[in-house]
Length: 175
Image 1 (cartoon, helix red, strand yellow):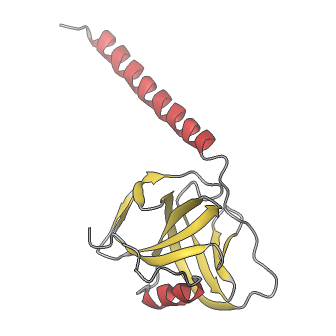
Image 2 (cartoon, rainbow, N blue to C red):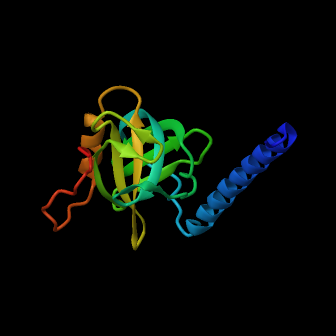
């Protein structure tokens, strides 16, 4: 039988080891994704078409909703506002500079059900796929706080540049 003091010391040691491992893994992820950055600042004279209160959930690798990316300033969940403008999507998140995804960066907009840290009713998340750089497409997930997101999604889809592919992307909304 292990003495009580030794058991407590082992549990504290194990807790410190787990926390240190989590910190090491998060710092490693920050270093891995340091080459990617979200575009900041809204262009002058951008006309706001729709404005919604949102919960920003995460940004992940494209079509890999459980593989979080730590793109600054989109590394952490936040409340804020999403504004659809005639030139793109502005994400004004609490405590962070405004991220602006110009329409030329947008790849697709659809619904999703699951991403890292969040599972909701079918189609309860808005997934915005965008180009973080020339070779990297990422997915950012938003939860619209004020009602049905369909009008918001429709406004965003109008901004997505037309492509030669006539096949709609797989949204993963039903899985």
